[in-house]
Length: 310
Image (cartoon, rainbow, N blue to C red):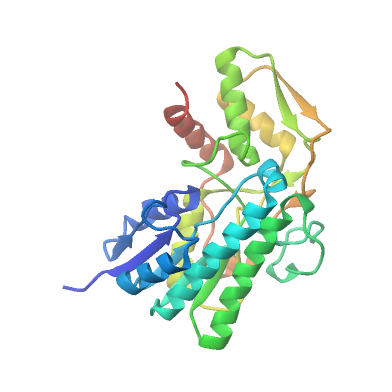
């Protein structure tokens, strides 16, 4: 009997981590190693080292991170830069030192300059200033990418980096104080329908454009890269098309059945004007996203209704 590959998903209860669990549970050759935050504190170097020394995972998906939208990033910058730097440094180093064959680090499209060319190619990294409202998170993620590259260059460690666009799907964070735009809209519209509110407020002008990728597509892309990619260069993962925030709000309103009016609060920040990834590198490798925004939004709304609605 062939032994199964031991795979550690760091952050398996988060949006990305839970999608990776769903995806890898379909693989009979995989043995998942999962630890909750209570069982393994990834900010503790000693705890992480002890786990890797004991369990010796052969593959690692580094999906653990402190994440959030504009408000969370802008009001808690120290937490965002500290926690992410510590988590990724602990996991990458322990993986290398304990014989992990391959590690995939999950970055973010936030790493690219605020005024990057659109769509954003991987090589525009570090060519201009970051978006100020999330630069702390972005700097931490850039450091994670560079850590992977450094360990590959010095030690030959097979660490690869995937840079996903804006994600959504089952397991998302719908807390308005810390969520991203799509789950925030789903919650606002769903609650407005329930309460009969005639109007919903949307942050900003509605003009910024964003690309959205269903998290199950991302999980599939990560497994694809783990099996087929090994290089220093990061790989963008996205849908390949974007929509304005105003268009997104209209889609969310329609999908939730909200028939009232939208009010754009232009005193609130817009963030980066546009974020569309150049996915040519991933396409050339032979992978393409499958879950469209309308379909993915419906499944996310259904999940929200089951887990949040009373």
